[in-house]
Length: 364
Image (tube, rainbow, N blue to C red):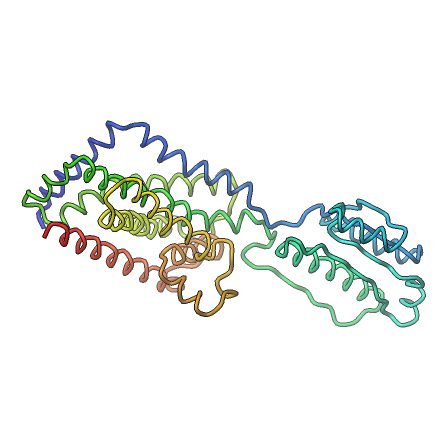
């Protein structure tokens, strides 16, 4: 492998990139646009949930329980029901997401037995939100009972994201998803464009080796992808106020490996396609879709069937999402996260080797 040949390819590719400034601007702006859209649109927080109350006791204790819901900040009173049919209609219309039904003689039962039953009906249309709403309601009711009849109390402490902010969880995952969306697409289109124009034949006739040619293509697009990474990390910390508990240098260093991995995927896609349209579609299928579904970005991998858990290991975005959240939220370092880093290095090497092998096969 001769570095002078690689430098020539890098210079040629850089010149072509500079001649197309619109593509460069779009490549730099789209990740930021995606970060803002997903950062604000994806929210798993439970705030101001509309609730309806059917208080059949109308006692000081029943009103105190309702006030406990309102004062928690998670719920707001939207409707006061007068019978069970109103409760059902309110949930069906979507006017309330939770209905609190307090039975008659609630206060007397609470004073006599120390506990009293209440009914909480949750709209389960959106299961993820419904689980959180039900958990908050159960905690409020349980805490109210324990105050009425003191016993063993649980003092829960949440580590790494004590405010339970969705954006704190989402943004570090977006670092990996965004970098899997655009760099592979740009690289795949760059090589297939040469195939469509016929200029790739000059490469086949030159003394360039496949590794030299692909390395020369990888470097400029890898640097663009690294600039994208720096931009989204900066916006994530400065604009969305995501705390950084680990090393920013370690995050950028491993991020550099990851961006070359994503660019390498684009190179591999380009070696198996002949047109830009097919390359674009294939790049989206093998990068963007798995990064949403099988990276742990939104859906926990441990809840998936075991076979799918094994399938997720085929996609590098999972390793970088785990690494990013470990550094950003937990303050972890290489001693804790070395398996993810090692797998990213191995994945990058394998992808580049496969791309070089496919390109050598085309030359032959």
